[in-house]
Length: 406
Image (cartoon, rainbow, N blue to C red; front, side, top):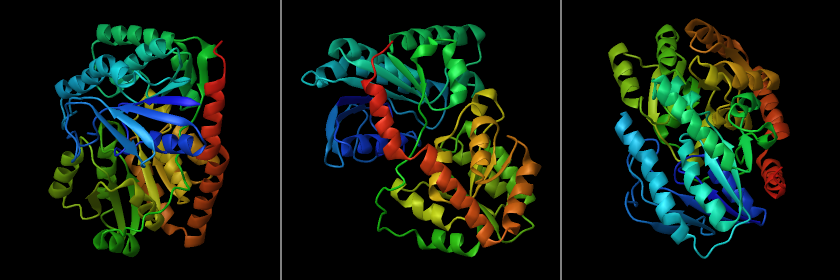
C-alpha cells in the first residue's frame, strides 16, 4: 500500500508513530511522513533544524519525511501552544499539497495526540489525493483541554466540540487507542466508524551499543530505583511523586528516577532543591535507543496520571513500553491503564493522586524477592506479546486500511 502518515510529532521526537512507520516499511509498504519541525517536549527546535521553511529528509535512510514550518511550543503559556497548533494547520494546508503534488496514496493516517487540529491538513489531502482518511485518536478533545485546564470557558469547549464533530465527519475510520474511548468518540461520530486499535512499541528494535552515563548506571545498579520515563507535564500527577519521595526519605535505598523532560521539569527541580530530596533523581532526557537499558536496570517502573475521567479512559503508551520491558510496574492511576496492569498481573496499582497507597506499594515491591519481581515482569511481557506486539498490530492496521468504509 501507499500510505501517508500525517503527524505533528515524529522522529527525532520520541513517539510510537516512529516505530509504526518503520514496521510498515519493513512489511513492504511505501510510506511517506508529513510532519513539523521537531520541538517536543522542551519547546525549542532541535539542533540541526530551524522553525521556518520546508524540508525533505530520509528516516532511517529509507523513508521520505516532509517537514513544514511550525512555531515552537516554548516552555509554557497558552500563547506559544496555540501558535504551535495553528501554524502546523496553516503550513499544512498551504504547503503539503505542493510538497506532495507528485505522490499518490491509498490511505492517509493521522497520528493524533493533542492537538486534533493536525487532522485538518489531512482532510484537504484526502480529497486532493482521493485517499481514505484514518484518524488514530490518542487524546479526547474537547475533554483533554478541560482536564488539563488549557480551556475553561464552557462556550469555547462547546465550539471545540463542534470542530471535533466536523473533523470526525470527514474521516473514513476512527481508530481509538483505548476501548474506553469508544463511547466518548461516539458522541461526535457514528459508531460504525470506530475501531479499537491500541498503541504498541517495537520490542525487537536493535539495541544501541552506546553505554549509559556512568553515574546513572551506578545509581540504577546500587539502589532500589523506581523509574518513571516520559513527559514531565501537567497530566502526570508529579506532585504526588514528590510527596511520595518525601515519605520515602527514611529508606536510604529507594530512589525515584524521573527520566525525561517537559513543562514541569523546572518545578520538579525547585521541589527537589527546596525539600532536599536526594531520593528524587532528575537525570534528564535520553535517546529512545537507550531507554531499554535504563528499564533493564530498574527495580520497577513507575507510571502516574491525574485523577480525572479522561485519564482513566486513557492507556498511556508508556504502559505498553513497560510491559514490553519485562519489569514489574507500579501505577498510580485509575481506569484502563490500571486495568491492563492488573489483568497482566504485572505489578501493583493504586488510585490516582493518592500518595500513601503509592508509598505503600513502593515499600511492598521492595520487600519482594528478586524472583517474585521477575515473575511479575515476565507476566507483563507475556501479556504484551499477546495484546500489543507491534508486528501483529501493524498487520492489523493494514487490514483496517484496506477495509472499505461503511
